Length: 247
Ligand code: 13P
Image (cartoon, rainbow, N blue to C red; front, side):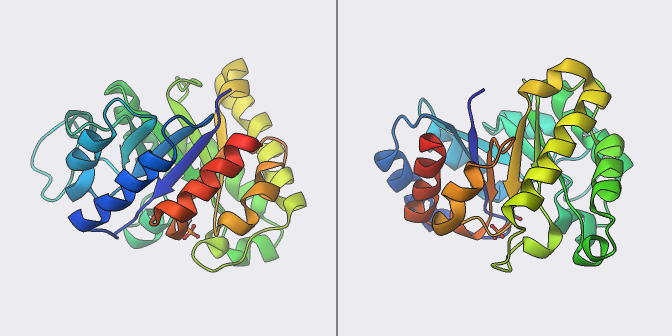
């Protein structure tokens, strides 16, 4: 499978930040892995235009489960497609925490995204309290069962394991802990969608940076990364792309 270096800009970046995309494409015109950047919606169409014909895919950070209607402030999957997106991040822990998103809502969003032709990047991960209570696999298993559509395939689903306590903190799980979760995810996903699970990219996310990317990418069943802060700068994200391409 082709590995995926994905960046989540979260609520960061204005149009001036698109210079980072130009720099990234100049430095990495044809990497041996896929690249994805998910900017704020305000930048989506312009970033997609910059990325057209390049190795860079562009995605949204959320979508509404409905196709259209009276949902002030929301964006539908079809609107993301119309703006040039091929992917959408769904169920990020910040959306689960800030907006009370449940597994059932993430599932409905993922179904809508897939129906619209997007690749759903479904996020899951435990809190620090859950890890300390030895609940990590139970929590992640329930999130997977509750938020991954039965009709998902390797062509329309990416799973991202993002321990909540590792996001933006500079802390990461041990390589053994990452390996344990990713092996568990592969098995659990097989139970949910069958043999297609073998080809689904499993990303690790949470404080991935140039200095730790190579060791994380060497862990089995890690098929790429979902990068927050380090995706905002072309030099840092480019270094992570290089590490993944070499893995
Ligand atoms: P950081 O890389 O900033 O820890 O963020 C990870 C993340 O939440 C990506 O979705």
